[in-house]
Length: 375
Ligand SMILES: [Zn+2]
Image 1 (cartoon, protein in one colour):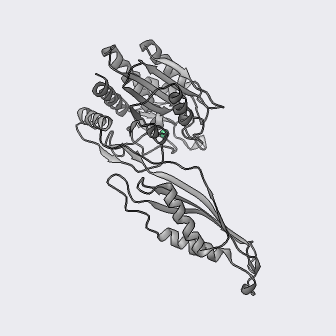
Image 2 (spheres, rainbow, N blue to C red):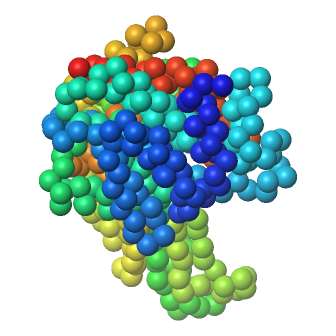
Image 3 (cartoon, rainbow, N blue to C red):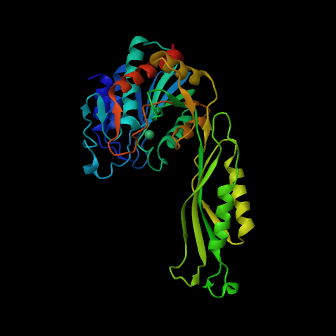
């Protein structure tokens, strides 16, 4: 078994369901301290974060990742116990194998090989690890970036280890993520008898008209890197249960995944104006915003694309789809942010797996990125 696989297996054997780190960050620190990395733990509430830096000079390359995993669901549904880290026929099994303990292990060994070959590399390397990426993400990466800016540490390039590959390792890298904007819309009416509608005001009818218009709306056309903004309703609620009563209130929960061409403020204004066209009495309770980010072609993106090509023989595709990632907290500091990790086919599922060879290949790609940027 290679060093990368051994570390990945050790990490999987720690059941670090959000926000519990279960010693994963200590394990990584123990691996890298002998190679000249200095740890700084930044714990907020139940969340553990680790900033591990080697060097004091610019430019600063950062690998960002999370040690927490999503819950397993009923363990008896797994073919192999989710925290056993079993390796069978070249496949490493377990919760977090792909998202993202495999990437963490690949970067740890990439750093070890790189600094042993280039002890006097230019600039600095750091790992930014959190145990709160899969959860509320309130005390994780966002708090670390605040602390770093207080220490005058500026990230130039950030590689995020999220599982971005779809069919084969490195076929897709992400150079941005859509934003996420959601909320609960409550429309108020006047309760009454269905036989006397002139004495009532049906909020379900008003809400239906609003949903119809919002779901048909054209928000933008997307751009070179982003698909067009989409709107979806996830839950709808209204009615007293009685068939002869017009209810007094109806609610819908909605979410937009949006392209950076449409600022959240303009989306909000447009939604509110459509609501006003159909209802006088309504309220929108907005959920915390997931900001989008976009990294244009530049030093980091070229280094990642070249490294994938050099190691695998094929060039990766750029993509901005999927959910949000912690890249959204790092990009606003001015850093170039790119995401590259293993296949995402089994993430968050029962029987999550990663291909053992893929982790070794990923480690070689990560090492090549360090080579391109810091030698
Ligand atoms: Zn992840």
